[in-house]
Length: 234
Image (cartoon, rainbow, N blue to C red; front, side, top):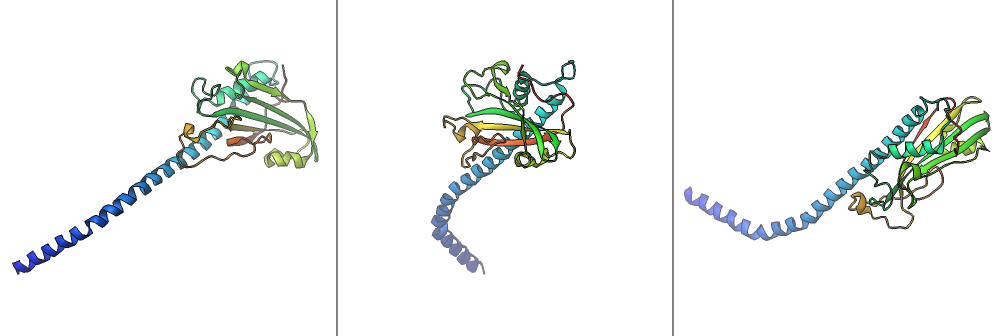
């Protein structure tokens, strides 16, 4: 009986020696697969993290927009107000002055404030307002690119093309679409590694203002407090 056990042990050891090389080869091939999988999981987490930061920034901007004029008699927002709101809303991602030149993350930040007021069922007043950190001279909230465009009249179809939630139910009703956006630099120097991506490459898409260099965006539509809009250039 004992001799039979020894025979079985010798056979097991012999089989182990025969297959040891195969196991080593399998292990060698599995290492890059495991590393690639880890990078892929990390990239997906980073992608959704960036999307969530854009969403948070949009809600921060919406909250500040509603409150910034509470303590003053002149309620209408100015382009400087939009610049301050834009700057403050992006501090959940950018640190110190990293939203400005030389843009260490390969991104600049912008917020569009698209205001509409229904005149009748197929006519709306419209104003495009924005602030961004795109230009080399943008080094602080007061030097940021900012604008309150002229008011124009557009159709309901044009309003719906921007965001269907902007369509109003009653004449005289106002709504604002706030779009926070991380945009790739125009000089094509963006490197995905700057944002911590290893495998995935974020794709650009069109923003609400029809520019095409947007990487991460989020839109929120609100009904502004009376008197905030239209925005003023001074």
